[in-house]
Length: 338
Image (cartoon, rainbow, N blue to C red; front, side, top):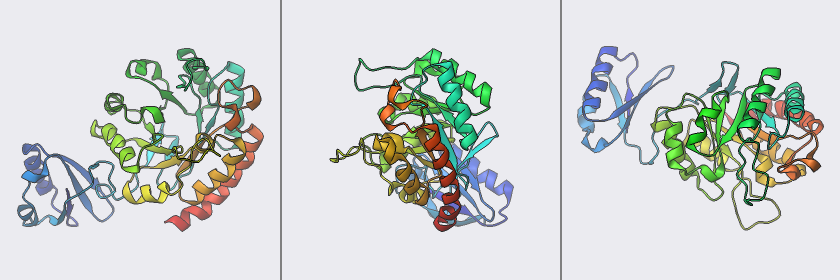
């Protein structure tokens, strides 16, 4: 349920209304716009009498929300959320964010070299996997805690914020220097992990599961937000279909759909979606034209010898050309999608 307040509503009366709702075990999430304030109600709103609310002189309208997700719902929060990373990078709200780096951290020269290269080309955030969930137990599983240390070294060298994937709750202490915690596709419905991340003060990048619907993605975001952490970034990384020509099927249509349903920013990962380096640029262009708030791509200085996902990693040279083209394309795409 949302309560739409009248313009210039008395603040004391708003506070009294919020207190009354809290006494009914209803959580209140206020959203202040330029001309209008909305109170989003979360809880058992069947105890709330709509006619009583409409009789208040500060209330313009009351609407019931049918969707099961509330905090992530655009009806609760009409304006786009902007997730700020270290007061240096913004995700959403008109900005275009480029996240780049290797699938996995392998060595100091590898991660720092790639970090310096992608920064020069326009990347805003450095990605690098330390804990790698792999289908085969015999595949490279990442450098784990040591990999996070090397990622932090690259951060010191370049000043780029860093993002890396967490696998389970007990790894949280190792992520103290990580600026954005990534929840991978396999953990999208690890609800205990999501609840714990809801108590963190770090931005969370939540990837869509391999076979999950858009509603299920938003409900997973709701788990994080219900804990108090509203800094959630959604990520489409391809879903599993009958098609075998690509690693997954990139659901570009989810971008405008999500823009209608939620205020959270959405970025696209064309590397995991396609599994092929040659397909990364065209899918990045498509996602940008569709209105994505950014992209996340895998970049490696020596893809044939990468320890993880070399086939889908583009070279620094390709990334340089791609990043410059995306920045130009975004200028036209953003105005069109508004």
